[in-house]
Image (cartoon, rainbow, N blue to C red):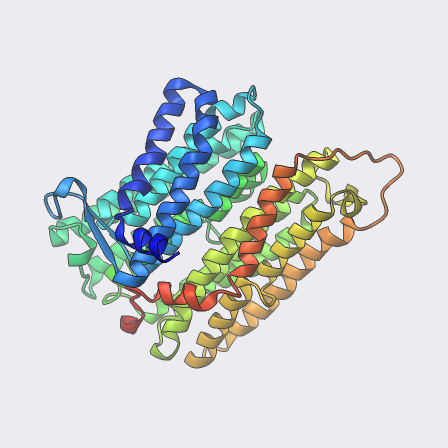
Length: 491
């Protein structure tokens, strides 16, 4: 083990996180779905090994810098990985591997949707990896745009007018968000003459306020923050299960990651407390409104989709809580930890929802009676993912909300505690609604099918990781502290 550990730390893993998924996407488009299926697991396993190696390297050696082609900034493209980037890369690789295994069983070899799923999914993962490693504003824009286009293509995989309408709505929202972000980038370049994050700093003036407003609004649209969430439920709820898992667990986290980078690296000298409180207010609205709408849903996947709207709200409580020095570190850790735990739990929930739909032949919650007996591991997986989303111990969701509560107490912002408590109760209400229905007696006219074991097994493993994040918090938080900006968070 010591030799393996030394080897993982010694290798520069950054190129291995970019080249293989992009090569896989290109070959899948050119040579067809059979080769894409054949290469999928080796490429995804390599991605997880590379992400794990980079995380160890960052933990032991500190933030890593890689100049593409040996040309560093400003003449070339420089890539950067600290603890936050390493954790996001690892989450992307782990969820990507689980979704890949699931998709091998979900899309048959002759399924037309699989022809497009494999290259688009590989392209999506490659673009997200590039985004997490980018260190200048324009490359962040390029990777954000590539990721969005791949995500829209994945949404359109479902046939029918509803899927096309959801994909077009998603496309328009993504383009609007990108346009607002790009306008902010242009203003930064005009004002500073550089786009490298390491050398930028905004002063508190009217131009900086405009830049912050444009870029924050654009990324809030892409993250589906209330009330800009109109595109998310039909896109996530109507897509095939593996696509829904990728979108909800990973894609919206990428735009949130970028927002974190900007607020606590570029915007920090220019932001003010009212702006941070406003983002927190929108987050509170997302928690309450998204949870209420989830309670009203009749279809299982739409309930899970509106749950994502609600869970996004917790991410934005980080901004007001991190605005006061006493709670800044806990707020940073809690917000990022929630992004990680929600990613694994929501991916597990969408994947097991796909298995439940396969077994029952429909997604109506009121007709799921008896599914608990027919699909016990599947319902156990749904329950484990629910534990993390509700924030119950010993899950990662519990650690995240505990840290956010600690930040609220330390900074004296008690009103966010009330929001989190009400949000937790509403989460329990809509998630127990599904669990209760599934364990009712089986209706006489109901027939179930047994889903392939891979559909349930992949989801179960992700739910275990969501639970395990609460048990391995010390190591995760130690990695998150590498390069963290929380020591400078007081505006």
